[in-house]
Structure formats: C-alpha cells, structure tokens
Figure: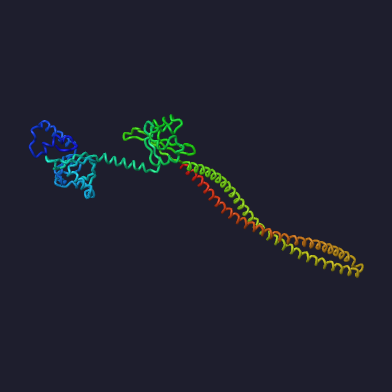
Length: 457
C-alpha cells in the first residue's frame, strides 16, 4: 500500500502501479470508483507527471492552459523550465527534488513561470508514486491556479504595509463602531496623550468609539449613515487640540462597512494659528494706518507741490517787481537830475532878476515898470527854488525808499527762490516716502493675505 496524504491513492495504486497482477481480493467496483475519482480530480485540477529526474511525461489540458504551453512544447523537458533560473540553481530547489526522490510529498503555494515569462501562482501537491517495492517511480502534481488570489493578497499586503508605515494617524471602526485597527503612527501619537485617554493605548482596539465621547448618541447618528461622511472637526481633549476627519469605508459592492478616522494633535499648530490670526489683525491695522499715512502724504505732497508752484510764481513776480523798482529808481534819479536843472535855472533867474532890479533902480522913473517885472520874476524864481528844494528833498526820500525796497525785494526774492528750491526737494522726498509707504502698504496687505492663508492650513 502506498503512503500518501490523498486517500484515493490508497484504493487506486495497487491496480495502476503494481508490477504484479491485481489481487483477486480487490473488488472490481472499488477499482472503478477509484479511477472515476482520479478522473474527476484531473478534470478539476491542473495535473502534470514527472519522472524522478524531473523530466516531464505528460500534462492535462488544465495545466497546459494555465501555463500557456502545448504538450509538445513541454514533453521531455525538465521541471526547471517552470522555475525562475535563480531558484532553479538554488540549494533549496535541489533539496526539493531530493525530498521527492525520498518519497516525501510536498504541498504548498508555489510561484511558477509560464510561457512568455508570465508569473503563475499555484496551490500544488507533488505526490511521489511508489512501485510495489515502495520505491518512488514518478511524481504526479495536482495544482489549482491561485494567481488572481495571490496577486490580490500581495496587493492587500502591500496596501497594509503602506498603511502600517503611513506617517499619519489612522483608525478603523466597523459598522457597530467597534475599533478594529489603529496603525503604528496612531498608536505612537496616542502614547503621547495616554494620560488623557479613557483606556490604555493597548486596550483601544476592540473598544467602541463611544469611549471618546461624552454624548455618543450624536456621533452614532452621524456614523450610522455614510451620506453624513466625510465629516471634519476639531475638539479639545484636556490641554490638547485634536483635528479629526472621518470617512466612510465601502467594500467592492459599495456597501458601507465602517469608518476610517484620520487625526492629529494640533495643539501647537492651533496656537500658531491664533498668533497668525493676531498677526493678521495687526497687519490689517498697519495696512489701514499706512493707507491713512499714504493719503496724508499724498495730500502733503500736493500741498508742497502747490507751495512750490506758488513760490516759483512769487519768485518770478518778485523778479518782475525788482525790474520795475529798478526802473522806478532810475526814474527817481532822472527826476532828481531834472530838479537840479530847474534849481540851477531858478537860481540863474533869481540872479538875473536881481541884476534887473539894480539896473531898474539906476534907470530911475524909466525903469520902474521894469523893476516891477524884475521883482515878480525874482519872486517866481524864489518860489521855484523853494519848490525844487522841496521836490529834491522828496525825490531823495523816494530814492532812499526805493533803495530799501530794492534791497528788501532782492532778499525776499532770494528767500522765495530758496523756498521754491526747498519745496522741490521736499516734494521729491515726499514722493520717495510715498513710494516707500506704498511698498509698506503692499507688504501689510501681503501680511494680511499670508495670515489668512496660514489660518486655512
């Protein structure tokens, strides 16, 4: 009897492999049943047979279809054609066939290489078939293609490994709100606030999410309906601030199977946000003040420019007045010269009148009328002299006043010129300050915008 872990070999092998004649005691019907079972197994499983040196004898259609070969392509080839070259050269592979040659069967999941290099995963059993003396004669392998299942498991394992190594805190709860999983990052974060938790960190899995809420009925109502999710909130846990987002988890059919929570401790971040908010308020105030300052500077600039313009106009007018005053001074000098000439004429006339009076006296009665005329002329000459003296005095005072006016207007014109120049300089400085203040306002506005953006984080 052959020692195997597949029960049908117990009844079948004496008929199929024994080199001697079939014992008469074996019931023919039992033999036929065994053959039928073998045929059924071969129909439902991929099957291939090897000699003990791993040479391929035959394979059924299920195996050929799984691996992508025809029987002619593999018959007479070695088993290693289905194995990765690196594995085929390994000590483990040599031991694999050595164990089969010792009559040991092997059953596990194997990775095999199909036609074109495609990877195939099979759940297989390698069964050594013994002859009547108990010596392995050949190997029969039955296999099931589990490639899709294995790839899915690999993908699930990869995803789980990714979740395990995510730097964010994850927690999964089923439809009954029982916590079924927390990742290492979540466990590590919980350790930091373990003094605030209702249960030890190692006891969280298996507990209801109700332990984290004072009014669990509210949270239960939210989590019960996937349409309520996702939901995002922040709450105070003792001295810590927690940011929490809960999303619905669905299976392939779209059925709601639970909830996944991502959370983080944002105490310091919340404090920074508050400070940023204050900074934004300060920036807003600064922006308003700078805006007012800019308006004031603009008004000052306008006034200074207007002053500069008026000063320039005054400077031009003073220059014109200075010319007029200079001309007036020249005229007064000319008047003085005329007055001097009149004075000389008056004195000469007076002298002539005196001579005429003397001559009239000598003429006696004949010169009386001439003496009267000479007296009148002398009187007019004296009046003219007095008038010219008065005019000369007044013209002198006018000349002195004009000289003072000329000096004053010259100094005023110089001062106005300096005011005009200074106003221009001040206007340029104010314009520069306005540009700087404009930059300050832009910076303040940027500060307000930046603080608003930071508060969104």
